[in-house]
Image 1: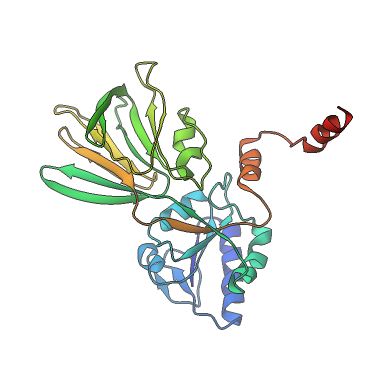
Image 2: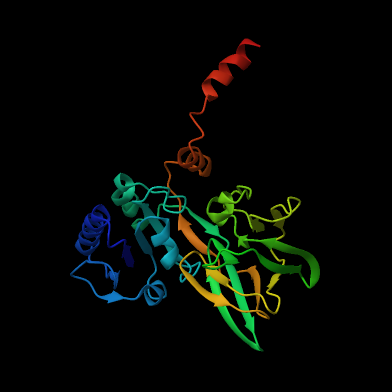
Length: 289
């Protein structure tokens, strides 16, 4: 199994050491992320580690999860332990980690498959491919100018944005950057493509939900400058006029271990501060009626 730990968070490192010790007591072979300050186990880079294990434990925040999850296959369950602030992906708490890990090792757990994205950068007859769990973003660069972007869907003209950029997100990514620009929250187990403009110049440009098998092509007009492609907020490169980015549903989903202590709705209420559920009061009111 594999262990990934956010190296600059002391509590995450401490929990990582406890998890490693518990796994070694069971006689399990553990492969540790090469960036993690954990001694006593062989190491590997994140991308390689995700392909060599049959279970991944990620201790950190959602950023730590994103750094490794998009390299994993659906056959590798990922147990994410939240040591950060939001934790939409890493919904298991620090106190639940050891207990849930024991359940997983005993085969008593549930997984939820999450859709991914495949993005293809087309440039002068050559292509480069990326994989995302949250989102693919084409946006302005350091100068923060309005950019012009032409979108088509399945080869059909869709719209032209004059905006700070555009986000193509998965339902998992609907609570990330897409949410901050006014995109909808979509239940994470669904399969859809969310297209959300960033600060569009035209108010009629709104977020759109597309079917999962749509192909969204974002073309950068010739002469356009200072445009950047960003994948899951962790990988990116500058774009030039004449480039295009095609975003589709990924061929490989990922599998997240679900916490038995909370539902997706519990996570939303907790992380977004939507207040306490008044279910009992509603039930009492209904009984009086």
